[in-house]
Length: 488
Image 1 (tube, rainbow, N blue to C red):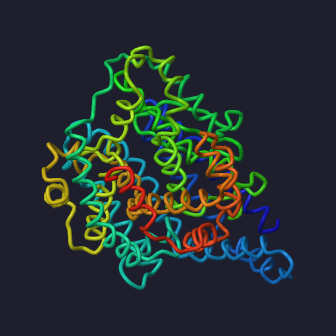
Image 2 (cartoon, rainbow, N blue to C red; image 1 turned 120 degrees about the vertical axis):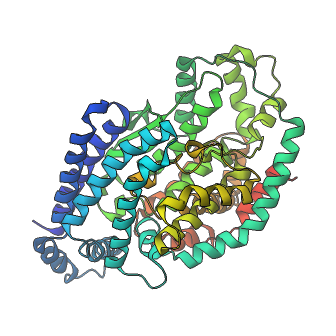
Image 3 (cartoon, one colour; image 1 turned 180 degrees about the horizontal axis):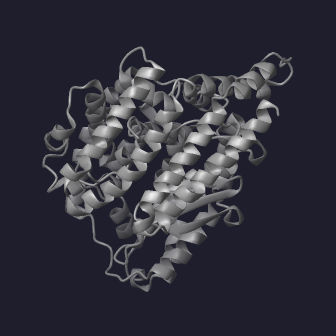
């Protein structure tokens, strides 16, 4: 069996784990969580054993020794497979199984702790996951700090120091924009007309929008969960989820636009290369750039709503007497909220700056798990001017740590930065700019397919952005976008 046959076998195992992981988040009975943790742990260990076996190493070496001069895609695939192999073989299979079991149990404990706003009941699980994260970082190795080793798994080729410089550059401007946007919104942002906005009507409207921007429902679907997400269960099988509020149809809509952005990326990857680096997403920061581009640069634009607001008024009759200008003011409102997933564009990145610093301190040993709530509240007060009312609205609000996702949060703001840079680059093409101004987004999707999706994971994220836009990731386009929307 060649290395590429083995890669496809590994993809089957990982896709099977995604299927039962998706079921765990959507339909799994509460009493079944313990056994589901065992299932996921077993699949994770099987995948790890295959990808770190001597047979895998031997077949990889055979492929590497062949003549690759005339096949750049093959060269890139083997380079990335080697990088993945070298990283994976540093972790023992026992640690992989322990990590999977710990995160499966932690997610259930987190959900219960969050419901009761009781951080102390989740703290032992976070202690375990933090110990595992440090253990992995030590095994992988790092040149700066433990966060580097974890960040490499989400945003390869990007150091903690680079992220910190980007964040430090934007921090004063974002705080100023946020404060101004909140102040202005408090004086004129209208409320949405009273509901109910029936869930069935929301589902129909959301599906129309998702299909119009290019999401292929023959290769995907939308379901309902507490926490919106997108996952790929196999080639041409992309699952989106959202949540519904009958008081506000925009909550589910922007959940769908965000997750459809992820889904469009997944559907744009070469299906024949599923499992190979050339058929895989390159990083979370690039993935997030796709979701933020469709959610914010497209979905919150005036042009978008000049086309879709009449359709929304047909779907939700209470909007009939609510002018488009008022609706746009509602969409562009800004307020300091304790909840990240409910934050507007103007204030969102402040949530990420807070989490980035707390994660770094936890991993570096400068912050104990027991002190996380106090540190969270102190830093939140410094950034937002008030403290969260309880842990449920504070340090327990996100699922990421319970998933073992330490090092993950930085990629959200990297996604915001990348989305603005990509959108600005696409608009430099006059035909694409004209189509966007006419609310025809298929040419934009075609540009993204060529400039981002088609590369899979054959380029490091900074290089992909450089090739697509002409420069390495920078905060310039993103800050310009925020100023244009909230200051001008």
